[in-house]
Image 1 (cartoon, rainbow, N blue to C red):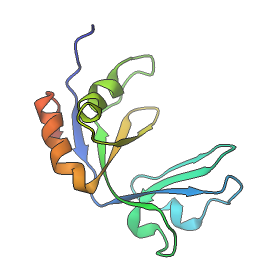
Image 2 (cartoon, one colour):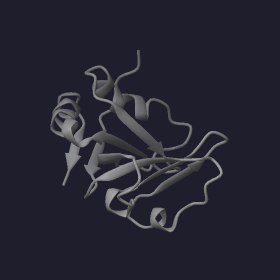
Image 3 (cartoon, rainbow, N blue to C red):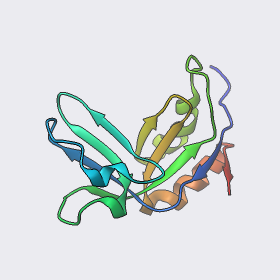
Image 4 (cartoon, rainbow, N blue to C red):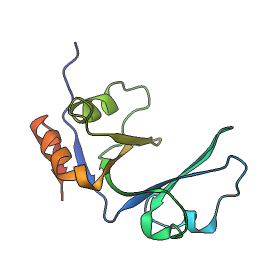
Length: 130
């Protein structure tokens, strides 16, 4: 078994929402603002991650997620980066929602799990940056 990586990460300010819309929905203007937005369209859905304050109140969405950003960049062929970070969370029943970009990974965790998640990540040797 490969040695587990020790990663540095930081918590992004604010709360995030995970929104699911119909696959043929246009990308709404409110989804295009913020330090982190992720928009993915598949044949099954239009999935949006954005600051919770952007989302209209009438939408039923998964609100109140904290976002952790791994300090990259990581080489695309590099393996085990995401696994080494989420394994201590998954092994302790902390649900995660992962977003990968060309340079790094973002992990969303429920706000109510954030203190426990940060403790588990520290115990696994990962370092929270200010």
